[in-house]
Image (tube, rainbow, N blue to C red; front, side, top):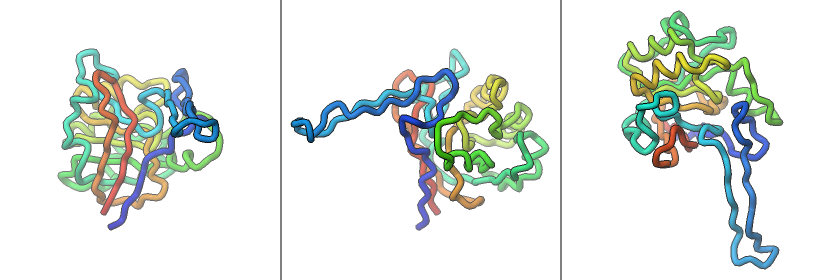
Length: 210
């Protein structure tokens, strides 16, 4: 079996969405200082690194993380490669993307994935994202789970239209994937977000197998 961990490593110096708190990972108790065990604390936005968006993220009456149906999180998924020349995933791009008929989970591999390998924590504003008409195409073609390899499924500075289309249709959004070492094609998706009651999002461990 081939296993690919497509989760971004959580670390204090990682890129976060502008305005979100940085990651704070502190070892509060230390064996070398006489404590019985090493114990760390963690503080971060629920939209840090690899994470999911619940409908409540953009819809006031949308459901929260703990109510996400498990069938959206596990099952057959297609990794779809979007060539570097496309800076927006719109309807025209999707029409030519060779998406398998009947597939309901799609993960988009773009030039974004290369950014995770770079040192430092600079946020990239010009990341490849899904346009509003692309989101409508996905909903109209029965997609129930969609993932992308940067911190938002929607273009920077215009987040609401794409999110509203997808979340209103109860499409699960996975953001912050690292697909740099994953070949396009059919995989089995395992996405396990923290079960945070009442939350608009949650960090997740995401693995692909085949």
